[in-house]
Length: 381
Ligand SMILES: NC(=O)C1=CN([C@@H]2O[C@H](COP(=O)(O)OP(=O)(O)OC[C@H]3O[C@@H](n4cnc5c(N)ncnc54)[C@H](OP(=O)(O)O)[C@@H]3O)[C@@H](O)[C@H]2O)C=CC1
Ligand SMILES: CC(=O)[C@@H](O)[C@H](O)COP(=O)(O)O
Ligand SMILES: [Mn+2]
Image (cartoon, rainbow, N blue to C red; front, side, top):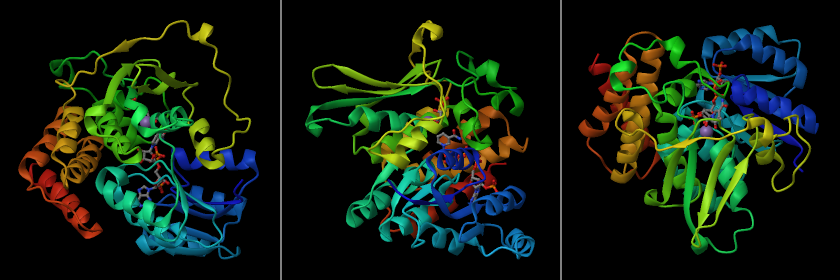
């Protein structure tokens, strides 16, 4: 078992649950990072005494440095700080739980520093999937899925004799708060309604992504890279209860699923302790208590973001980075009350259709595509 973690995004939903798991497993924490939440980061520093704390925002980093000058924790800021946290010599495992493609450079840095990575930050694989997979392969490190669907698939795949026996991956989707709604009914939905996920308590950005079903689109792309499976072999089924976290189908049509209560501490812990398993703080699943589980086809017409991600994946090149960049921007604008819910899908699809595609060969290519996508969205306001 590993001894020490570096947690990128420790103040978020996945980050705080990772600390909960680390407590139960008696793990040390070498580095903690936040974007702006220095109040919570200070509490975490005082509790875990990491060697390094990083605040992405430079001014807030100065404030934290002053507030914790009585401790021996170093404070850094910006991308350099994140990269330092991702490559710290004393950390055995890097947990990447930042939100957004800002996690791409630190992920590459961690792989190049020969660190195994417990990976929640899907936007990084959606934008730089090939670059990350190449770096992971070249350095012989593990990219361990934390996202519940991908952890489920990873768990189902344990013991698969040969890759050629796998027919397809089946991702489950809850359908979010707007399952079954028509486009007309979605015209005037409010941020508060979109933030009301039926089964999971998560950060704001991913919760909105679940409501638009962009999250499932991002997860199809994430699965394509994590498991090296072609897009036509990745299906989505809506499963309202979020008890089956995903499935795989073998060539003989036998289907294997992973089930559990919707609590991220199971996939987080499995990524940390893989391939071993330990008791977890999550309750037992009682199928009798659940009673029934329901399944539906996804509505690709109404949920344009899901359709856009499939399109981007089939186009290849930087199209997925464009879809992601447009969505990061549109998602934020919706939460700020500056655009409507349906405009998110229009903007993501519009960015894919209007920005020239090309094959990325380096991080700067991906960053350029991301910038173009964000500029496109802002130009449409
Ligand atoms: N929450 C969940 O259950 C699940 C999440 N995921 C994925 O995990 C990732 C994290 O999600 P979640 O924990 O919900 O998100 P949160 O918004 O709750 O947390 C995000 C974390 O990243 C930090 N952060 C935000 N922006 C930046 C930035 N520009 N630079 C550096 N750090 C930044 C935040 O700091 P601060 O607190 O200071 O803002 C916080 O620590 C996402 O990619 C999401 O899709 C996947 C499956 C499930
Ligand atoms: C917990 C988790 O992994 C989320 O990605 C979750 O799957 C979101 O639910 P949706 O299926 O509604 O997108
Ligand atoms: Mn998920």
